[in-house]
Amino acid sequence: MSNFMQAAVLPEFGPATAFRIEKVAIPLPGAGQMLVKVKAAGLNPVDFKTRSGKGYASHQTLPAILGWDIAGEVVSVGEGVSKFFTGDRVFGMSNFPEPGNAYAEYAVVQEEEFAIIPKEISFEVAAGTPLAGLTAWEALFDHAGITWGQRVLIHAGAGGVGHIAVQLAKWKHCFVAATASAANHPFLQQLGVDLVIDYKTENFQDVAERFDVVIDGMGGETTLRSIDILNRGGIVVSLPSMYKDDPAAIAKAKEKGVEVKWMSVRPSGERMEQLAALLSNNRLKVEVERTFPLKEIVRAHQELEQGHGRGKIVLTV
Ligand SMILES: NC(=O)c1ccc[n+]([C@@H]2O[C@H](COP(=O)([O-])OP(=O)(O)OC[C@H]3O[C@@H](n4cnc5c(N)ncnc54)[C@H](OP(=O)(O)O)[C@@H]3O)[C@@H](O)[C@H]2O)c1
Image 1 (spheres, rainbow, N blue to C red):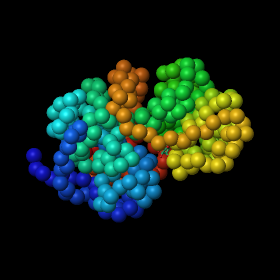
Image 2 (cartoon, helix red, strand yellow; image 1 turned 30 degrees about the vertical axis):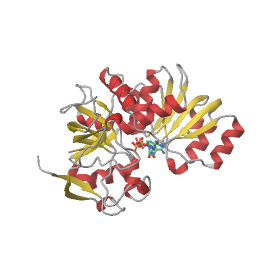
Image 3 (cartoon, helix red, strand yellow; image 1 turned 180 degrees about the vertical axis):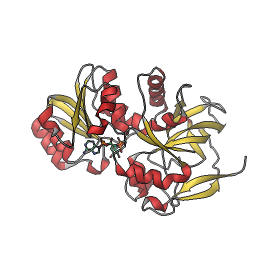
Image 4 (tube, rainbow, N blue to C red; image 1 turned 120 degrees about the vertical axis):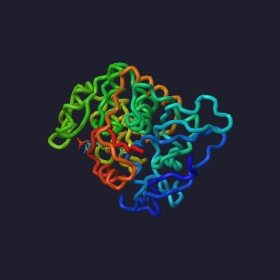
């Protein structure tokens, strides 16, 4: 094996065209770490926000290798690694929000943040799962604490987080409503969504009410309107961090006797194992709408930035 690899390197924060495909040194795993040959890397909105100098840009060092979602094969393990062996197929959200270095042929990852990919699941689907899946899990179970049979509304239901969240809520036998444009309605109905709302032609507050939980992938004014349709004691989990701690949302929630929460997803190998089990027994299907080879990183980011995807965009390496 040569000591060098191809990577999509970001010399400066800026537009998608700022990426360069370059030869860089293959990193070495330290204690508790593994070197993974990346087979696929999932893209998330935080990737383009960070690339443009927002998101978690302040946590990166230039020139940077972006990306956090990794699916690949273990090539070597550092001292103390006991759960994984060379050749294992693994996936996880690596080192978030510190540099994940996913857009490369090899990446060093933490053992404790990864899990084995079920054998029937492709590297592409595995790479689409971590950040979106961990977010959906944390939002529904840790922050909103959903219980059997509750009424749950998911905004941006067809997106990366949304399409996983609707399936997790259905798994808990909730009544699930979701917002999406008309083209994505059949997709959401196939996933078991009980009520699909076209955000382009309808105001969701006019169509449905009395929700216990709203998972809001849009934020801002969508969070404010969501507060109006909650039962007393209900919760909105608002995902886009740019609206974090919005005083207007906090004040309105207080007045209405409901709660609004913001979150920042955390890596977890244990959670990845739970998602792996759901993938394996077909309780969870992760939709990969498009794949791009690593060398087409510019096009992949341009597509990601449109914000109208169904499921996930994944780089193949
Ligand atoms: N705080 C955290 O820890 C955390 C973690 C993950 C994600 N996030 C944030 O959460 C947001 C969603 O993430 P994601 O990965 O799910 O994004 P995504 O995959 O890019 O979401 C795309 C989806 O958004 C839908 N959409 C666009 N405008 C909409 C509107 N006005 N109303 C309803 N749906 C609309 C699109 O549906 P149509 O194609 O039908 O228009 C598309 O399916 C992002 O801002 C992301 O950064 C935060």
